[in-house]
Length: 191
Ligand SMILES: *[C@@H]1O[C@H](CO)[C@@H](O)[C@H](O)[C@H]1NC(C)=O
Ligand SMILES: *[C@@H]1O[C@H](CO)[C@@H](O)[C@H](O)[C@H]1NC(C)=O
Image (cartoon, rainbow, N blue to C red; front, top):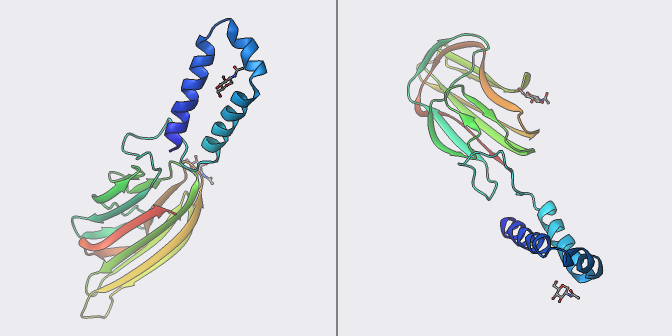
């Protein structure tokens, strides 16, 4: 919708600019035209999904952002503070998640929801935390020590993010053994 408004405005402005010498006078006198332009501009400005010229081609014009990722392989002995890289992308609308680094970058300001689940292998631990830039937001304690079965753990967060803020899942102390495939996942979306 906003796109069409922008196109309509562009057409109006173009017709004014190309009408040459007569433009200046009629622009000043035609109050209804100016009112219409101002109204259309306001619609575009008020629209949350306004055109972002820096957006990636995979960003739909709806402005929607959402991803779901998992890891093709089990992860073992990942060091403290290392990013848990989920290398398999199921959904990445808006292109905010980078599967080579494991980092989600907000392309637009907004309120975002994240959740992740880790399944720790029998007898092992895989403690993680969600980091916004460098700040710990939430921790997840998936520990199956002394157990004869696997142990899952989930966490979630709602975050007000600015453009270029980054979210990642990192090891909190101990990343002994996370089961991969689709047992452990990381997802998020813009509310
Ligand atoms: C003013 O603009 C409207 C279109 O918004 C047009 O229909 C009308 O003829 C114009 N009037 C004058 C005097 O230019
Ligand atoms: C987070 O980091 C990005 C770049 O890495 C920076 O552009 C942004 O301003 C930072 N946000 C905060 C709240 O510090």
